[in-house]
Amino acid sequence: MDHYVEVFAMLPFVVVMFQFYSWIVSLTGLDRQKHCRALGITYITLGTVAFVFRTSPSAVVGFILVMLGLRLLEQGLVWTRKSFLIDQSYKDR
Image (tube, rainbow, N blue to C red; front, side, top):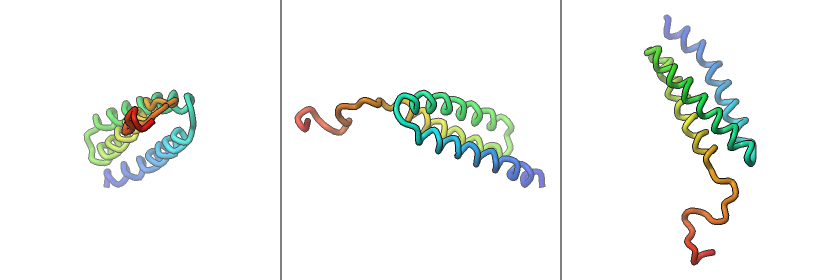
């Protein structure tokens, strides 16, 4: 019964985290980079803290937050002013 209460308590938390993720990813330019890095670090930190509780619902939420945090960090490190893509060679330009 305890696990059900914990799951129902964490569901709104996960929904709010997905909403923040969607909002930050929809930004553009340098503003997106800055916010993606900050929120990515926050998600990884919260996910690691959720692992500390050692219950299955918190571990699942922690895993979700760490994965979202890594995706946000990856999107925050993208170079915005690209002149060519990685899979293009200099001959194709």
